[in-house]
Length: 199
Image (cartoon, rainbow, N blue to C red; front, top):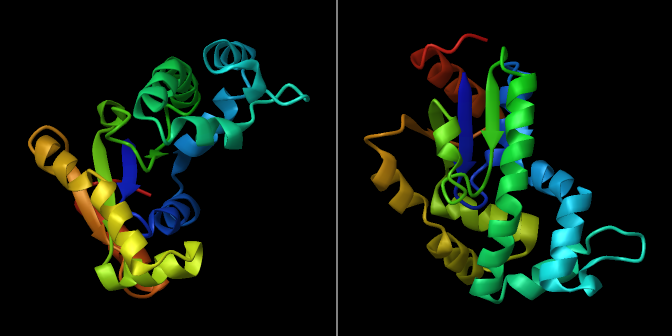
């Protein structure tokens, strides 16, 4: 079983991911880590230097992710250019990982699961969500973001649109992360049982 895991900002995706791994035995493919790994590939470094300039490569030969991020995230065209460059390598690494663990229950954890088109790999999608008040509190504690900044981040996310778009074609399950860690574990156990997923 391959499950996609995503969620709204500060809604508890990392916590749900940890419980699914530690308590329920899922193998987790973290797309952030896949992205980091992709940046170490020689062919990716060469393409980044070619398309964004040699200054994006540090003297040690590694991609300066901070500098690259600053260069693309304020420019939509440059961001699309980088995403287009990275996508084949990310998918290659993802497919390799899926093949290695094909006999296990797998979680593909990605904040931008739908944006990256990764729902096509998944039999089910788990979307974690929390109350706005809890998101505000978590956003302040974790990132020191004001409620206004958190509200802007939430507005920039397109999860609601994706849920509406894919509701009839993808098996989507929303999971409430409000409450104690033990309550979340119980909710996850209940969801897995309801979905017929064995531990």
